[in-house]
Image (cartoon, rainbow over all chains, first blue to last red; front, top):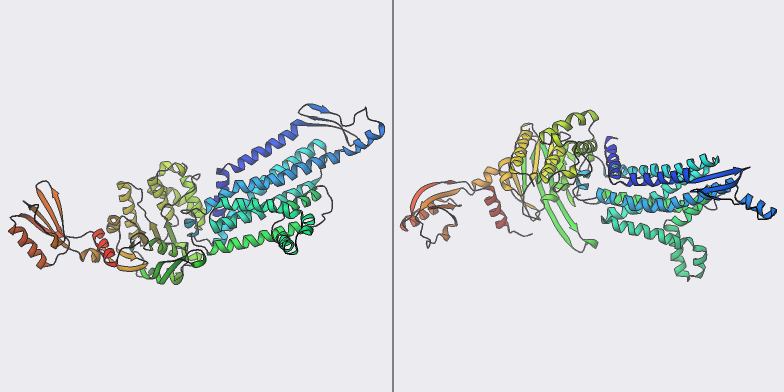
Length: 288
Length: 312
């Protein structure tokens, strides 16, 4: 455990020294403060009677509307729906920004870890290579978990205190974001271990995210392709991470709806596990 | 003290390019034995395979064939490195760590207990002459200070085998002497030290024995005395040496220092010595003194490598 703690400590200290954690903490705190002080709600019988953002007031139920229209609007802007909309927006944004920024921010970490003059000293210690890499990975994952919990949990807490609506299902975003970050970090780790070029690893990881947007439209694209092209396309769909489709799962979970299909998340997880396995194998065997 | 600390058996390493189109044979069947308590220098020209040999012993590089053991344990086992300290060439400690944190992290990685780390860190930092820098980030350290800290790191777990790659690189003469003194003190405590250095004068002063590598093979091994004895020659101090006098057949080096001239004859066969004396006297040269000349390790090393065919 002592050897593992050494690897873990090195990762935490590096993340802290790179100012990544501080930067994300500042951004998350700003998001909290904005929600806490800039947003004011006036709630009447479970509906939003008035909404003030940065002091600008708006009344969604305008008295110039007829009675029937006012009732429809009142239902639409019910407090629950408002909280849900905010949650979907904030946590959807956190999913994309959190993962993309997280990958960008942690990319130099694995590059530094594998730097000549550093990795050779690390692997000469009486710690097995898989354990050394595990210490690094746990450090990265725990840091991302802490930061996402601070951001998402803080926004959720702030909104709940403000509105009195305490719906914990929104917090399911935390494991979803961390897991998908972990899946995409497997690409960063494995490509960097193989090539020792973390920049290339980031390009490939972002490329896979972009590709997942194309693969997400499989219902529309597959029927118009020639049989061979369709087979290749659908092969990619099953093999590569379905980053974009997972955001739909997250939205369904946040809104309390039943999830249509868990397949995109499961196939992404399988991709991540396989990629990590390959990265571990390569790291254990390669010369430094 | 006769225990074998390091042993390699037919150790070979071949580096292959992508798809195996080009192969480089870095090591071609290396057999060495280093006894506990010895200080052994690994010498060789660039590309001889010195660093590859050290990295294989440290588990950083895998051998293509052959085996190696540290105190009888195969190098593939992580536990074999429990008793090992290593100072790599051009090591890079994370610049955001202080000297204390650096030693603490590497101590943890060496599986040292908290008590042992707390006890050894201030002592090693003091021995390295870095006490006033203990809580300063290593990013602010000079090359020489980094090297001192690197040596402290290599000694952190009180290892029985210490592998040093260019330990005096970037260190000033006073620091070099301190490092030499520390290595001798380690030897007195029965530690085994393996050194790779281009500074042959340092090797000559510290090491009991050297292993000379060329083109991936051991071309010579033995004590420093054995190596320099082969070339024991003569040193003449003379006056009035005519500039036109041709002494090239004797393979001598001539150095002028004021009115006196120093002639160094690397090869010391008596017949050649007498022939040179006759030639000098016939030319009217005044011989002031003749003394034994012990050739340097560098001269011996160069001769061996040139004989073997120097090639990168």
